[in-house]
Each structure stands twice: as structure tokens, then as C-alpha cells.
Length: 64
Length: 139
Image (cartoon, rainbow over all chains, first blue to last red; front, side, top):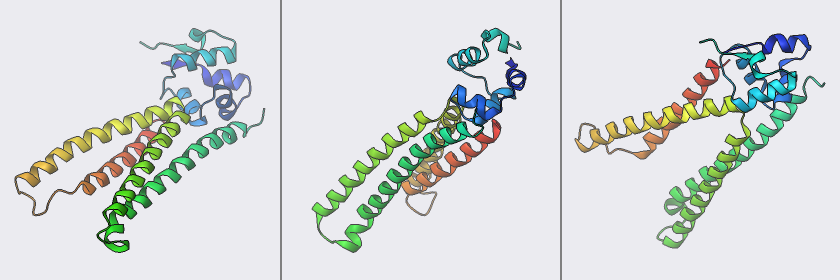
């Protein structure tokens, strides 16, 4: 699954640790999501969408 | 926003559950040693003491299991997945190796009796190796 988490985070000048704090996950998990190694659960994707004020589809896109 | 606040909060939460798990595990190991070596070196022919040590060890084991559940719940979803994959692999490896080991013993293809401690060691090594490679995969 493709995502724009890194770009959105960079736009707001947040570190991975700062985003992780808001998502209530570890920094390693934010890094794994950004690099596409780990796909977040639906609740976590919703949380990310809420934080960035976007829809899930605007952050995460299916690559299939 | 404080740059280190997540690390601090995250690490505190995880450190607390890890520390609890470590304390329960240590208590379980020590009471296991007591139940194993107590009848040999500390008391002899005292079945009640031995029973008491075994009951104590079992109680510490139950505490360790509860601490382990709490520890797992304190992990985030990616860390839980790494743990789940490591546990699944460990279960499979121990089942397969354990049955083969038992068969080797039953058919007398090994000179000694099969010991459960060997399986516990294989379990520990498999779990640690799986955790290491699991964490590396998501890095």
C-alpha cells in the first residue's frame, strides 16, 4: 500500500517521533509505515487521517 | 511539540511492562530452581516442602503469564505482529522438532532419554532469533 505519510509529515515539519506520539505508536512503526514495510490497521489509518485532516484515501492508496 | 516526548512516553510505558515481566520471570526462574534443587540440597524427604515449592513456582508462572499478556498489550500493532509471527514460528518449530526428538528417543536412535529442557532451550533460541529477524524486516 502506497502512502503519503512522509510528505505530509515533512510539510508540517514534524519528526517521526512527534507523529508517533500523536498516533500513539513507536517511532519505528511510523518509519515502517512510511517506507511501506508495514500496513497500518484501519483504526490507525483513521487516526492518521484525523491528525492530518484528510480522508484515508488521500493518505493511503492501494497499489493493486 | 517536544521532540523527545514520544520516546519518553513510549519508552516509559514499555519499560514499565518489560520491567514487570522481567521481575515475574526472575521470580519464576528462582522458584523453579528452588523446586528443582531444594529437595536435593536444602531439604530431603520432606514432600510437603517440595509440594510447597512447586505450588509457589506455579503461582509465579501464572504471574509471569499475566505480566506477559500486559507486556504484549503495551506494544503497538507492528510490535505485536512481530511477536505474533515469532510465537507462531516458535510453536511450529517446537512441535516438529519435539515430535522428531520424541521419535528418536522411542526408537532408541539417540543414546539418551529425551529431555524437556532441550525443547525449552530450542523454544527460547527460536523465539529470540525470530524476534531479531522480525524486527530487522520492518526496519
